[in-house]
Length: 174
Image 1 (cartoon, rainbow, N blue to C red):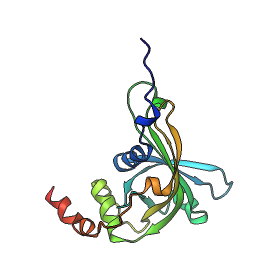
Image 2: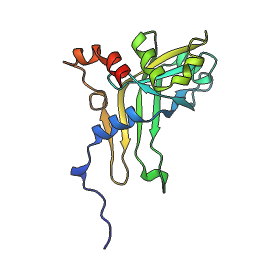
Image 3: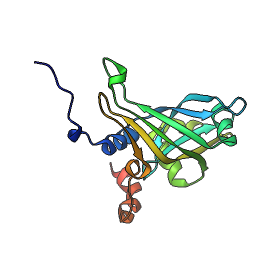
């Protein structure tokens, strides 16, 4: 008997996109090279803001940061590893504009996800960045690729004020 690919109705693309955003800790950040304009990709560590927007901690000395200072457009590829064919595993490319953030919550969330980054987060040349999600492309495996709007990738926080206010104590409790 031949194995059939999962049906389209079993595939929840927004849920898988959010799962990849929330669980993967590294990704390939693509920026536009400040000199030649070619795409430039580099490995970065990733956390997420409350709404799922990717958060990054980057050095002012790195090529990708210098590129973003000239052009804020970027994409971030998050790819789930696994056995077998790597192209059979889910992956998500998020596109948007990156901007520096000094928001304490962004810092706290990033450092909670990457505690070792506390060693260099306060160096003068490091800063936190938030990738404002404008859209995404999900490839969830065979016959499971689709474009997603920002509203399908970000988490709607309407009505979550009490939960947001309790985040720090809830995390400390865990």
